[in-house]
Length: 137
Ligand code: CO
Image 1 (cartoon, rainbow, N blue to C red):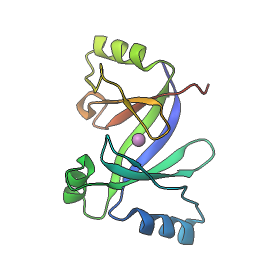
Image 2: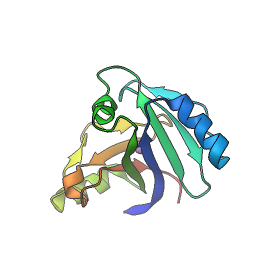
Image 3: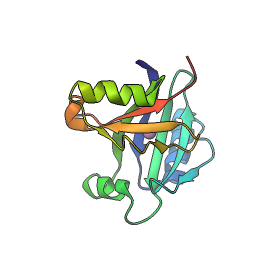
């Protein structure tokens, strides 16, 4: 059901500053920033080869990640994302096991057009987990 790690996501107060910092200190290159209007975030990815770092900043004041920044003004890890082969099947199986899948029934899409859903943190050992439907093995 879960086939791999897609990314670890970090909320940052300033996406462009975060990209410059990762470049200067770590030699990492951040890709082009895109806005996910549905989720109210502006985000970009750092490719690590076997997984990515996702960097997110609020795209509007009522963005869900604005609240996160209020609690963590310097930013911090927000969620991690695993790939699944079939998001509907994964959601159904997790629901059977008693895990709350957020947004199930009306799957959201990420900026790459892949279908995504989130597992409630209380149902995954305290961590917010994103599920991403990926055609990749
Ligand atoms: Co993510």
